[in-house]
Image (tube, rainbow, N blue to C red; front, side, top):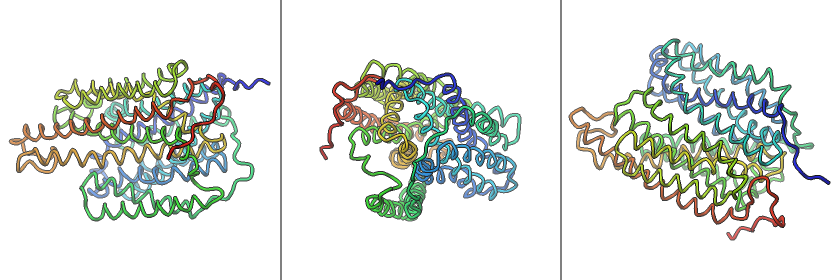
Length: 494
């Protein structure tokens, strides 16, 4: 009996493009909004608190609903959930574009976050189902990652063009054509997935507990990054962690949990998921500092800073496309470890960088090295579960990335801020943006010292991650090659 997986044809590849385009434009939408905030705030009369909610409410609801939407897609059908999310996203984008006041815009952004959570894990789960051949699947995941990374590359450019010719609402409307295209072509191109035959009812208590855990935790982390260890931020974080403990305990008692904690007993699963978490957490914070460096230290405007980062983003895009090809010849463990070694080299360069060219080069090297972990790690996480559970696994992967980025910005951002306060002269303020002209040179030097230290911490952590991946994932074969003896995954030693 031939056990060779069926290879995808033209229909699946066109379907991948239909799935990738909305991901690209949603990613663009996130970046162009940052450029539009000053203008829309003036037009709508948004105060500082309302501005923060306009920016943050999308991320709050996206993070909070990912796990729930992954489970809903597994039970009801991912294609159905994807189309519903796309329709809601398109309508909410139009409402946001023509919002008459800050409250309406905040509400529309909240709905966009929920719709985005419905689309994210379902898109990845559908890709896994469409591409059964491991080699094609790795390439498809690389294309999907390309669409996400491409948004960060062209977002500032698109935003600059739109805001130069149109009103601020245009940054929301760019996602609408992609959603219309998905709804028009998706039914013919995307296969009907098979939800669980007799799905257990969604445990609403678990849904409530996950929201009660994630939303306060994300809020607390973001506030820690902005204002330091204030009581409100710490209380929110503690509340979130408390509900997370209750959530975990409940999952251990359910026959059909929202999150199958047994997955974490698999060393390959938790290593791949943990590796991606670290990969997002540490360099994510470094990336935020680099964008500030380009604008506040070198004096670049937002558009020029975005253009300056294009080589670094392009390096990451190339890496995510080449990595699946290399994975056909080399085992994941040495490939991921070698890539992370290049990332460490880039971070090491950042520990001494004092020019825009050196900073961008260091970031480019990091992005080159991150490609194998992003592509192989995503495949390992989602491939660790049966096809009918792919949505839940995809949601865990994306939740780890969301939390990793937020936690990295909070923790390492606080480290950089502490270094700045220690090195900046009295009267320079708490941040480089508030430093008076007379003290600007010393303040810039203090900010650069903070960037150097964060890069050094990240380099050490990424090096440790490389060693762990090399050790734990060593039994995995190259993509598309049968594992010699079909031996089971080594049992955890912990």
